[in-house]
Image (cartoon, rainbow, N blue to C red):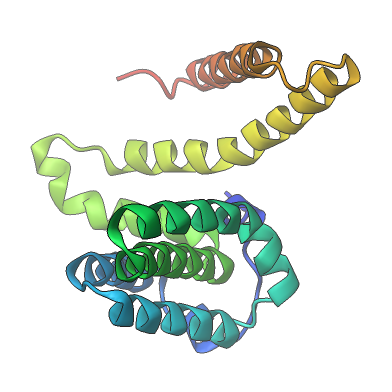
Length: 203
């Protein structure tokens, strides 16, 4: 099963590329836990600085990275303004800083880790739970389907928006959401039929 995580993987030789997917996934989880445990604007800015440094170590192009997070930056401005108004600037810096730090860390993970390695790490990590009824290969398959479905859904959303705009309905939620939901559900049924045809849905 070849491919890259959400189309973001960039081959390289950095130290982050050389860390195996399993330990890297564990480090990402610990990083997220650290962001939740630490409080205050100083810790948030430190974590954000670490995440920015990680993007440099991974050799991620700044223009591409900014394109990936530009929507989030708009959301961060809105959240920051609201938090400043409601709870003061220290809380706003803490919330926005942690948010951006975690998103950048996740982007570094996807940029330095092929999806095949992630799925293998998930399956290997779940093997001890097989005696409890967990089927690691099924969980890994579910991860794979979700990861590979997201780009398709995003492309469907862009096509739906373009079609609505061509009809002058780009401001109509119904013209955007209904076709998107119908096409997404249809894609899910097609995937389910394909899996069933290969016997992957049988117990």
